[in-house]
Image (cartoon, rainbow, N blue to C red; front, side, top):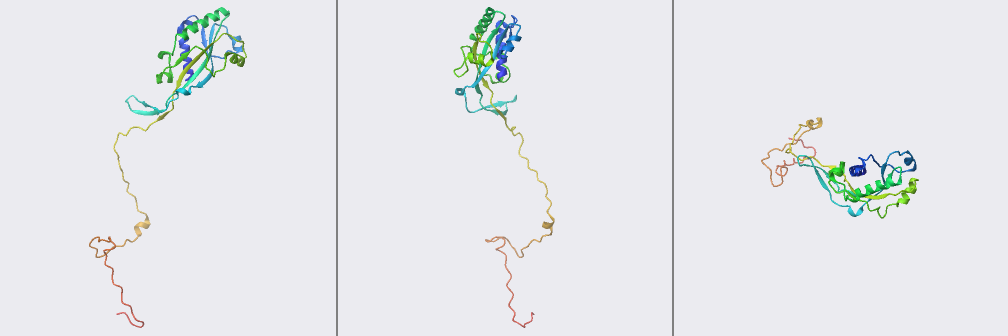
Length: 234
């Protein structure tokens, strides 16, 4: 998302006339070594602070559809971040730098949000506004003097630009829709050797299940008479 905001700002400033006048728009850190290597008029848009806007954090989610209108994924709501830039102009004379800053300021003040034609990637897919505020830095963002001190350079006139952009939520693929009925296939299972050699009990003189089930309706044979010791069996 951050590189897409960079590209949107570059296109916005290029259309303001900077590109036609031969001014280069870069996103490098304006350090002392970088300034020594610069040889052409340049507008530097340096990103130095990124913070989430917790007041715009949403709940729920959305659905992603394919060309046929079927749900293919579910996406968590986007989260909004505030990107703070330090915009400076670099030229051979201070008057030229002030002229470039004035041109950049007029362009940014006339733009409340990046036009849709300048958005790319996920920013274009979400279709949400990307707010642009050239009125200064956020309350928690470092001051310009602190930024210049950290970069090791000399303090220069600069513009504080804040951009509030959405970061696309996480998409989770869904299962494809069911288009066919249930199909059941059976496979014959071979019985083990022990099952084939086992004996199965059979009931004789069985007319039908009685009130006690199949086992309760069978007539049990009478017990044989007891023999006395010494008697022979007939």
